[in-house]
Image 1 (cartoon, rainbow, N blue to C red):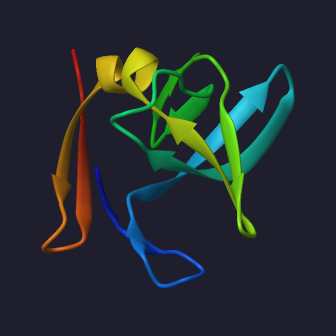
Image 2: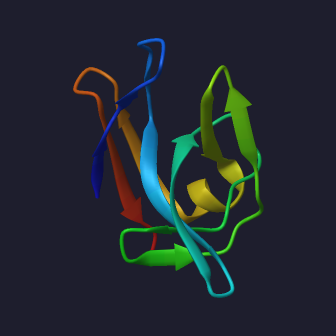
Image 3: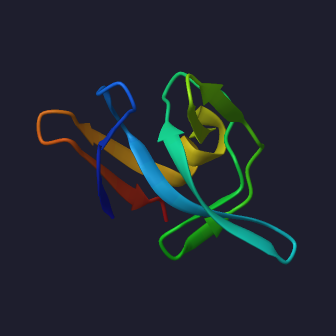
Length: 94
């Protein structure tokens, strides 16, 4: 799966991707920042892949999104950051 970097409110490009989060029967579309320095992640569905992770959120100068990090997300995906082409590629680990 490939995603484009997203421009923040202040013009910075960030590796933010769309996901679907769920808790029981409650489902919501959301966005998450892929952060290699973060230890925790959220419960998400990326494309057709679903898995449970620990929850972490950030609110920063008017922007609100989840954070996916080393524990869980980086264990579930091979992640390639291509800053020059403003793309993030995710490949699920078997």
